[in-house]
Length: 98
Image (cartoon, rainbow, N blue to C red):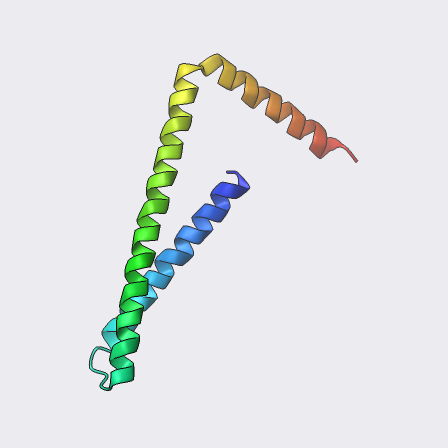
């Protein structure tokens, strides 16, 4: 897994956790009274909707990227094997250097 994939996975996990925590907070404060509480809940609900849309968009982009990579590998299997072999050798040489 590349560092970009790891970072994307970490961001997705954190974003999902924030969404879950925000939903729990909205449920916990549903009976709170006062103009400031209502205003804060509305802002949180808007931010939550934006976060959900961003999360969906990130997942769609990741899926599209995986499909493009899969298509490229299926269309050029021998070239893909050659590139993977070359990258493996290069990494082996770099790791074994002192």
